[in-house]
Image 1 (cartoon, rainbow, N blue to C red):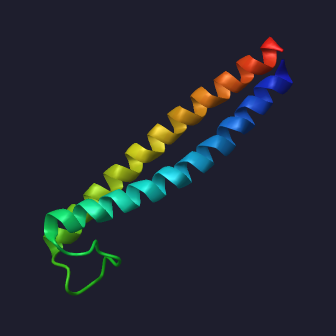
Image 2 (image 1 turned 45 degrees about the horizontal axis):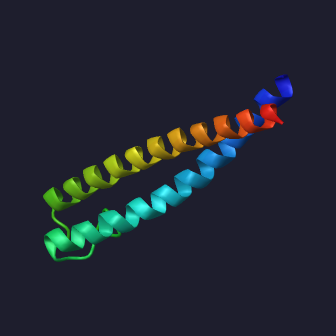
Length: 93
């Protein structure tokens, strides 16, 4: 029983890491695409870009951070569900 719990925890950690990286990449692409569609400009790459005004930098930082938190939470939730399904299959066999 303790071994299954350890494997589940490891599976959750690995799954969360993989899903977080994938979700982060997708979120970054989505934010960049939406930013370009709304503003007509490419998404900022550097926070200290002198051509980027303070309001745009602040809005972009807030949108990017909010998207990152959402992606991380969804990835953790998905990994947890997947690990539970995996553990249930192992105990069924």
